Length: 413
View 1 (tube, rainbow, N blue to C red):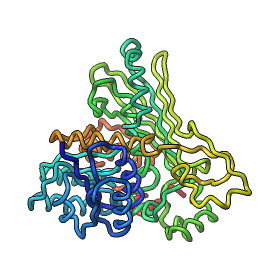
View 2: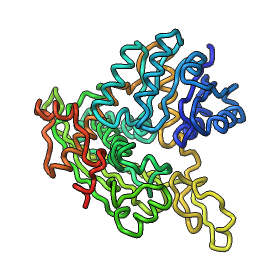
View 3: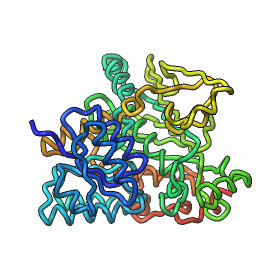
């Protein structure tokens, strides 16, 4: 079988993480990169890692002409433009078998819908990259509990959290470019993974129907004068003028269309988690059974004393978003696999080879975007939003949160 040729559009943090994951995927190479910056570095990494002869291409169209599939790893605010260029390339004859888009699909429902329409117009299969749903720990938990769920009934409560000290790049902190704050950035992960865990075995990822959502958004750390100044100095983003939330929590209620059973997905996310580094926490509760996942419970621990700490050049070699380089450190030996990146690439490649969408397609990404935006709406109203109300759904189609508009002070201060 011929090796599957992937091309990356974008060469930032997530593209580099995905390239590390690709080293563990059989039969796939990274053959091309197009990016405004970092492309040469990423191409060199690919070649040094045995991922094939990776070239830097000057345009999206040129990249598309030399790949089987392309992955969109660019910032949120240029996604629509980039996908438009991909579609133009396909119409001009580029032989693409699939298009990947990193979460979130869109900053608003309107953007996500536009991206779905572009992919449909090109008649190219899609993959929505939500890595946490592909985590081996989640899949193993659900497989182990499958007989129990059949006997006792499905999970009724799933809780999912992702927390760390804040993003790497300035645009992530800017709500007008990113689409919001931590809810837009990471709430999509937690809502998606909890929804997946609650879904009965063998059912489509969208089987459970959203009923309602409530949510709170808050600015707990990065709104304080000292930390506002730190953020301004480090990232050039002024939270005194254009703030975004650094903490969010809420509940999405889903209904089982076959049984009428209501189940709850609780999500919590923050950019002010100043502990070891990135933590993913998930648990699920059913009648008489449960599971729990905590990615900071590593099989490996390292201790670095004060005398040796100066020798550590990069704390993130131990753990993504790590905030410490001394003391007792949790170290994840293989983060790319732990977080589900390897499995999501394998799924996309297999699906595209078969000429079909990945397990999670862009239509699924659209629904996640809708739930995130409904959560923002609930936070603004300080009330539960009824997702079965046709008027609410119509409102969401054109809704842009106050935080994404740059008016976060109206709801956060």
